[in-house]
Each structure stands twice: as structure tokens, then as C-alpha cells.
Length: 117
Image (cartoon, rainbow, N blue to C red; front, side, top):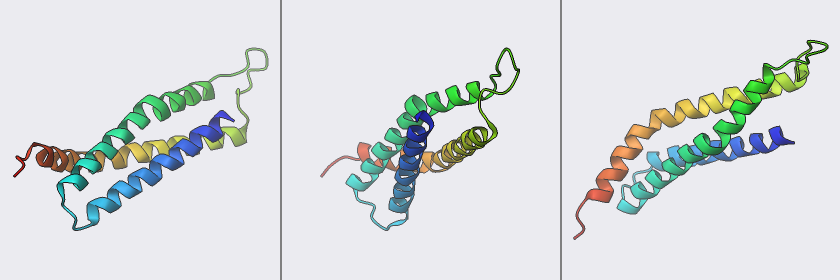
């Protein structure tokens, strides 16, 4: 059940990132748009660091556990594959977020600091 919730949260984060990337490709350079993009970026980073990352770390730690009596892995092969698949998605999400982070932060801060007329 916990992995399903984590997978759902990762799905949501991927949609948010796609929306952020799509908003960057439009010609709209309005101040509100850039500041909104900056806010979306920070929300995504918070979600990855404070929610997804913590839960994913727990799963990866448990993946290495084995039963002390039988020495069998804690999770079966199917569950191991599911955990590794979600982990790969989380790492890809982190990589994509790093790729777009500098551009969004630079544009958002420049717009936020610009004097208003």
C-alpha cells in the first residue's frame, strides 16, 4: 500500500514537472508566469526532498534487508522490481529537475526583482 501511495506521488510530480517544462516553452514571459514557474519549481523540490526522497530511501534501505533466519530478501522478486522501477523514475525526475532548475530560478528571480512601473 505504501509503495502505491509513493508511486502516485511520483506520478503527480512527473505531471507537475511536465507542466513546468511546457510552460517554459511558451512565448509568455509575463512576470506572473515566471514567478509562478519559480514557485512550481520550489514546490517540486520540496516534494522530492521532504516526501518522495524520504520514502524512497526507506524502500531502498529495506530492499537490502534479508530475513535473519532464512537469509531470503525481505521483498520478493516482483516487489523488488517495482521498487527499483519507482527508484529509477525518482532519479530521472531529480535529473530533469536539475536540468531546468537554473533557468527557472534565474528567470523567476530576475522578474521578481525587477522594479515595477
